Length: 479
Image (cartoon, rainbow, N blue to C red; front, side, top):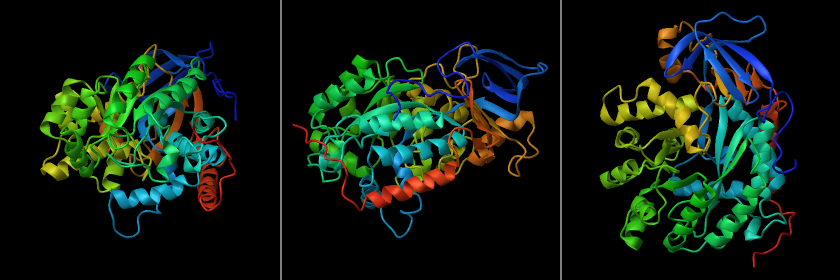
């Protein structure tokens, strides 16, 4: 692996250097509207100027199509990508799906995870994603033994994001119990540090390795109120505040979680998190599918962000969350691909509107501008990249160009370009991706990961081969 804390190199600036570049967008989404003939000027990893209605300088890089701010995938479990297609036979629920997910966990070690995540993050880059929030809880080896470097798995994920050209917020996750009042099962022992103080100490070491990195944020996460007891929640929330780090949490994804929480604590999961200081503008609640009206008001009043993952929520038969109601209550909305049933933030964005149409039998809940904001600015802010997700001077030089000449989008005119992309584009329409002023995807080809489809396929097969063998790591039991 590369030296921890050093930015990836090759093909342009990643660390705010003086490299200057001009990019000429046929159309670009600037300030909530589509402008034409837009000159984007960058220096290092920052945008220095955005000028609509101008003529192209002779040496500018042409960007035909609609150029958007980079997309932010606010909720990812990279290893879940190995499950695609393998969980679709037969019937079941979230809980039966989880047992199949545990089979993939068994094949993870730092080497297999590096290869798998590199392929997954390359797939994200090809889909226009420039920043990912990796909700990371597969910390240790089989049986809960620690690797010689306790953060080996976290380092592997960060190295994978760098190899694929993405910014990453590694949301290091506290996971201590198998359920409310339940012991960890054998697979879940890999996820646990024993208690929140030990988790915080390990995360502090991980953060120390990347304090000067321009492409990495080490954040924090509570897996869920199922996995972190009430007496440990406050420690995680206080650690996030001490670090000034984003805090994410799975919230009310399943009705069983709500029922168990009410039975044990006489509080809903949202109320429990609130009593422990875990809600607020620095927190993102993921899913928030089954909420009471009081929960909605609590999240909105506290300005807690909510990350919706519609393709996963429908794949797992979780239900439809009250995204628009939460947004109107004051909760920003971000988007994630979660289990990677597909990796396509255009699909995630339009699903919020289309799910509402099915639920209410009425159209027109989400203006396209709100959906684009969820996929860009709100997602970046959720992940701690306050300067990302907008095309403006001083912002991160991260942007994506969607071709408008495919069979899906041909005929699009500037006045409906935003709506056309939100409601008809797919990840396959992404043509160019720039991260930190560096071209990561050109003409639909990943420039940093050779033959990304083959590499990802090989990595998935390796994970399942290893799941059938004994771990090569001796590790050490935590003591």
